[in-house]
Length: 138
Image 1 (cartoon, rainbow, N blue to C red):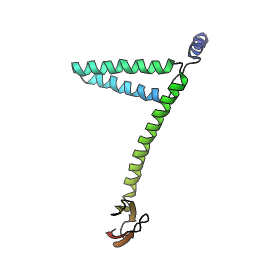
Image 2: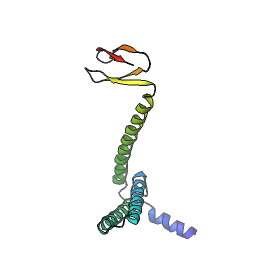
Image 3: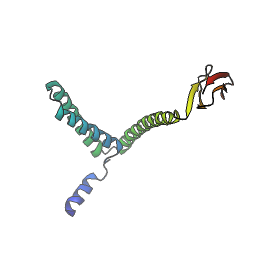
Image 4: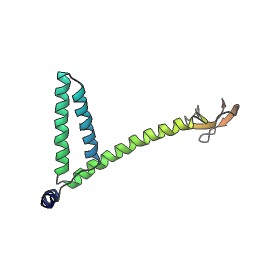
């Protein structure tokens, strides 16, 4: 067992290995394979099988690549995209949580979002960005 481990370590020396992008591609591959199992359509199966083959080749290519800088740059681009998606959904979740206790209005002049507590009746709101005043029900 140790001999096999040493041989694998020698083979992988100087190669890129796996990263978050490869893990994402592996998850996409598993989803494609699951869809291919449950959807019994000839054309769909052919398309999904070709996607699965392409993903397997891409995963192994990235894993065994010796061009570490290029694979690292690809992973960094993926991570920045993943962070944008996480921030978008996190922001949306935060806004939905705030809607329980606050009304969120938009300034008619500068389109700035303003958060007003619920249950205060009719109030005059002054925009902190442009200084415009408008009346809203809270």
